[in-house]
Image (cartoon, rainbow, N blue to C red; front, side):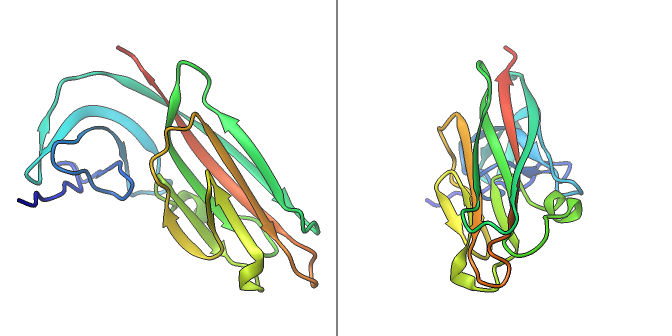
Length: 182
């Protein structure tokens, strides 16, 4: 029997997942809100049962948002960085946005990116020459959901090659570190 997915809680907040849904039997205690800017928060645990949400056993958690970025101008080598959640915290979610041609990702653009998604707002003029990378996912245009990661770090970067401006790119990343409080 195929069971329905849960997509929103009673208040309309989206549940955290690879995409904004939870499968039958999944307990969820982290949520992202579809406002501006989108953020990740802990909340009361809910269990998805046959497409509806029921209260689960409280565990308690705290989320800390960390912001980082890298930017390169006139450099075909691009840039890359690694950021880590300090122990005992663990990685709970990532938001990433790229501009792969002249300019930076704006606050408005970055604030619209859902948790666990990477989005290219401006691809390279030479489509195959721009790259936005987050934890092994490499995209040149559009957006993609980031797979759940068991990594404790966030490896990210961008690059862009062309003759006109010699490679400009910008990537902004929010990563969320979760610490259980119980």
